[in-house]
Length: 162
Ligand code: PNS
Image (tube, protein in one colour):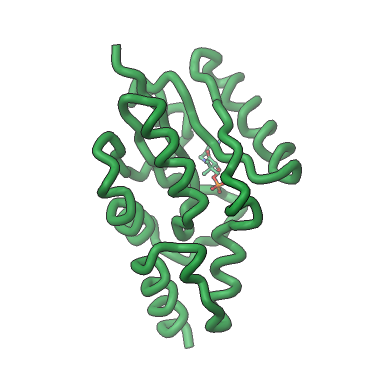
């Protein structure tokens, strides 16, 4: 039976750190669904459609990766895809508490779906969408942090806002 995983997140916007995790997950699982979900504690810069479209573009090279969005619980999405696993990236100890909370909640909702963590590549251990947005907002260089198409989208977004 094919192994299926979900890589969930806000992806506002997708960074090289996310791409590293998606690429590695795509080598471990037969099929990977990257899902843009709502994080109620964040106010996104990009619309869901914009985030999905950027993700589709930058994951095009991975044949077994599909990008979607979902309005609801991650666990319901994972069930609908018959996924055995949810894959999340862990950057540092500071991520742990938050991830433990989400993982524990998801396990209460459905204990048959495992959450697996991949340590982020050291190169990206400091990297987050928030820090990228902050740098881009003040015209700092983000070319080492995000793909060119995302860099362009950030420029446009901040130009729109001024
Ligand atoms: O990239 P993020 O913001 O850390 O991702 C968090 C996300 C979107 C995966 C999480 O907020 C989520 O799963 N949202 C969907 C709603 C849900 O299922 N909540 C219950 C688990 S806390």
